[in-house]
Image (cartoon, rainbow, N blue to C red; front, side, top):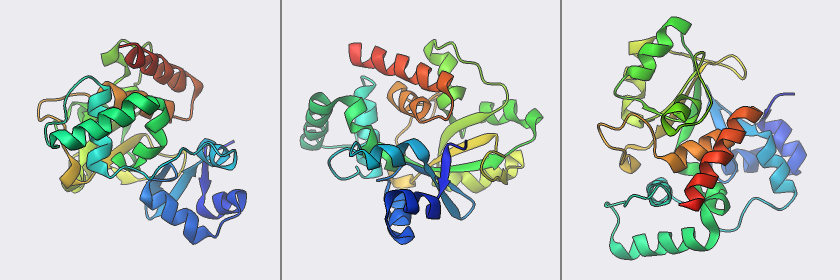
Length: 228
């Protein structure tokens, strides 16, 4: 069974008009990825929404979502004023990273591509890509190896360049081996010399993966962060 649903399939499950489901996906209120010009919705997120577990509160704007992830990773979002940092720190303290996770979906727009397998090592070494998910697991001591796929963040303005440099082709569901998590330029605050995403982002990306091993690694990293 696929871990993704088309907009019409998700709309049927949720008993909503497809345009409403498409809007929820675009707003980040319903975890989804964009494949070409079409949205594909996470099946587990649909089930949780049906069960009333989609989380209270509006989705954070991308810059604030990244501020929460930076705070949860033990660092400071210096681009925010002290009052805004205090509000987000308070939300994190009250709800925890796991509780806020549904509201952090707008941190990036996920897009699926296909690359030649021999190009993947070069893509992962590209300084324009900040590795995440399975591509960053080893950097955080997680027993999860990736040799057949690539996962990472980059700013919107770098997408076309990365596509050309590594001959990336848009892919359909189940056909891609590259997941690019595209962040609006206005919300891009990852360091120029960072090779991997903050641990809080990596944990949530692993939890959102479609396989049990990645999800288990995400839970392990999340538990480590919560303990810290």
